[in-house]
Image (cartoon, rainbow, N blue to C red; front, side):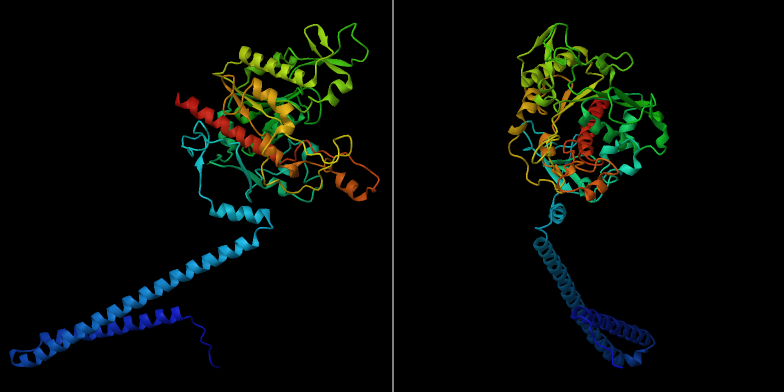
Length: 499
């Protein structure tokens, strides 16, 4: 059988060069033999020696020519190989670019492969000088990029997630919502390190105070921190209460670090209670906009004693959850029957600002206010058939205007300030509204219980199920809020250590 010669021209070049080297060695050996023989010549053989010298000179010339031939061939082979690799890389890049436009995941991967590494934010590195007016990177300005290393944990491995947030376990078939990472435009966020954060939280308290979206974020942080603890049973609720929708508070202790991560349900941040005697029958309750929630002064858990204190509000400051339910507003002993929801919200944020100024020791407590988290109901709202179940990808184009959420954002900006210019010392604004607005794919939708998937398959066309397009699947979007929180926290810790 005749063998097929399928060698490339480059392979033939290299083989030919090898043959020349081998021949050179043979010639060199003969040359050394001739030198040895000449040492044995006597004076009477000088003519023969001169002839040998002439042959040696010719041999030296031959060796030079062979060496030049080898060098030329090797250089030629190297150039051919380099050009081949460059051409192959270019072709591969073009093919990838042509194949990617229809796939966000592919496009993101291609863009990431070509991107230049940015500076690490807040850890002693400089950032792009054009990032902001202050020369510091805006970590809230960026884009969502696909990252196969995400999520940071799985809900099945975290016992601290409310059933309604366990979307994949509740039957959601698409889990891509957990694969998106936030990438600032001019710098990189530090990778979340649970053990590093826990070590800096040793003997300290973390408090979340706000509505159920705040609970969403609190549960996310519990899961993220628990990845740094091998014995999950060493993390427990101090009063033995389970995580569920309820009124009141939950305090989880990380025994190995003697720290607590606490949640206080306070959707208005100010108290809601019975209406004063003699008020109109239309009142079911009043919301006291001029004092902080009573839990802020709870004798064993005063919010002002926290080392890291995170507030949020907004989702309950709606007509349908206040005046529409007979819940009016009160200042002092006076019920403000004519006060609008917008005015009441502004007054409550001012109350928060006054309390922070009066009660918080900024050398001890780092205070953060997280901005409004947009909902994504289409064709209605929570109680009127609103839906988001068909949304499986983020909006890749950022919102140019946040005007539709102005009622929730303007009071915070006017009273507390922005992430670049907070109006209180020691306060930081976790500005998540714009980035979160792009994540319509991250809500539980119909998958709010283990039986929800079978109910979805068996429902008739006339049935309408309540969808959750307000809260977030875990793992998911709140993990990003906590990655940003981690960056703010670690930056402050490093600043304190330097002083």
